[in-house]
Image (cartoon, rainbow, N blue to C red; front, side, top):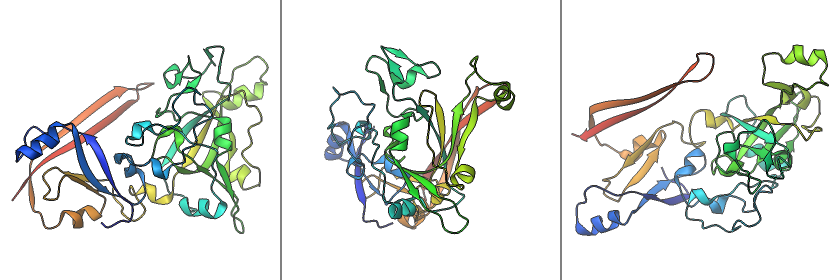
Amino acid sequence: MQSKNSQVAKTSSIASSASSSDDYDKYSSGELEVEIKLDLGELRILSSTLAEDIPDTPSSSKAKNIDSNPPKDSIHNIEPSYGHPLPPEEASKVVPRGKDGLIRYAIIIPDNFCSNGKLMIGLNKRDFDIERGTIKTKRPSLPMTITELLSSLTKVDGEGEEGSRYIFCGCLNGWPSLLHFELIKLEKKRYLGPLQPPEYFMETIGQTWSSYWKAEKEGREGTPPIINDKNKIYRAKLRGAPWTSIGWSPKNPGFVFWFEMQHPLGPRVVYGADAVNEIGDDICKAVSIIIFLHAFLFVFEIWTYSFCLNIDLIHI
């Protein structure tokens, strides 16, 4: 696949063998240049030169004494970025209207989530640096503050019976691939306080989150996602562009990637449907298949499984 946005990623790797002494010196140094041809999409996380495509304004929840200009040679140095909403025309293009798209859930917290060295009740301590009063980057719960969310939304007007949409633009919790989403729903964490009416308990019984705002309901009626009670914890349901349901980029479907260590032009990674053309006429035979399976109990006897399929191939 040919792409204008070709990038080179440096990954740490030490080869067990090399064809020449020069190759051995290059591999044993711990840095291996791997060419990855990309256009857009989530596979960009394999590249370490992504900072040029991401707004470099630091997050408002970031500590002041942290270096605001980290080296741009690693995805681990990319910081969250908010408060740079796209114009409506651009926002509509990066997240087209549609029902498909990968779903993400982000925890939305008050701006003053940590006061006097104490984290507010209901938050996971592992996601925060309590001493600095900041949010840790690249956390599974994708936490961000209320101000960070609302300042990164763009309203895209609908046509006819279609309601308005609200598009998020930013680097969500420092993840380089989580840049553009449509806000689908806002939920409020259930609060069992003494001042809650009986109807609240009946409507939210057995639930951790109660509905606060929906795009298909309040959004269609013209009500923006305004959060009035800024001292509570919320959860945002975000949906990616429709093409994220079928691949890592809009023009190259398929959740598959192929790493070639011994390619004549050097190690490379190809992905998606175009991997078939990139690999060419190579004929391989599978000699072994290994499945790594990990299972763990979640809650209420619900098991969660994660597995990896490793296929060893030889050229015929």
